Image 1 (cartoon, one colour):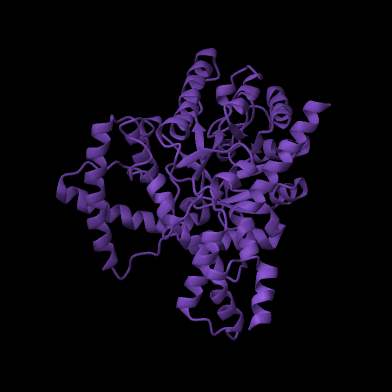
Image 2 (cartoon, helix red, strand yellow):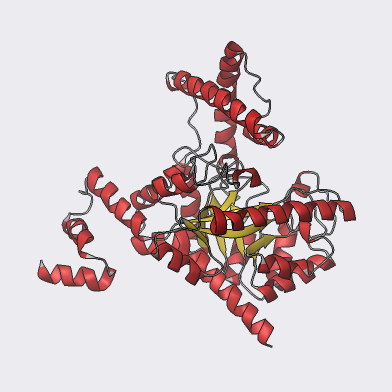
Length: 446
């Protein structure tokens, strides 16, 4: 036993409090680990690794003195939920929807972007600096996590707010942005969007000339380039141009989920060649469009039935329509709407639970199916995890940050080791960030 303890401490570098668990696991014959032991082992891994979710949308209204992430709001991400689920790092997103390619449109987008930058800085420097800090580097992440704090990082979804002023790339880096996509849902001044695929309608044929400049500028200022929303052609051109590895901050495998937001094998092999990483997203309709459609149709039918009984005006069009509608409400209206909606949802869920013919929802297992596929195709070093929480993301078992452990548990069930799980949750993404910042330093110094 003494020799085994020495071996474990040398190989796994773990502390004595968890030594008994490791020894028990090593001594348990293959296939005979009990459910209790498996869950305990998964919890130990989850506690030890740094968990990063690379895409969480925000609303500046939730970053005020009276309403903020120190409270367990109706958001999928906030500090109490992060603490409960063991989520260490949230990439909070400066998102601006695609608008007109005009000076007025660019100015309005810039104003919206700055408000979101300011909201994140307010959380980490004024509202809750003792609970969460802003990280700009991988060392910041590890330092803050070591101090027992949660970590915020900033991603920029849609470079539309850059406008025609390429110098704003540097400005956004100085404001703390550490990744940025060149387009969202709709063609930007920089790149075509994946949404052009439906009608074969393109604006630039990939990147615009300004978009090519933006790639150079992001390389220069240490911003990771995000491939999650631009078109396939724009992504392949970006991969050819970039001197640094890139990421797809919230995408899945198109082979398993046929959606233009997902990456096909050609893009994935190019991403591997580039040294980048795809952060597998827990978004129902991207993971299993067919399965989600069946469940959603059945669930919406039950929801409408319950809403009609209660006299509640349920928005048509599902979750995304509901999120869009909520954006137009003031705080009081939103709270009243959500309270009534949650009561309708709770009643509907109880009703669905008793229905024998209710379709199965998209779940954590489907998320890990995509992870398995990506690992097999391009290698574990190029795969990570994301949610798209508060932007439509979430699956059964990982519907908010409080359920983050369930992802680790499913990975353990599939046979992933602690070292592999650490890479999936954070190691691969932080490796890319380090390399992007190394390239930026090299460019600036030259």
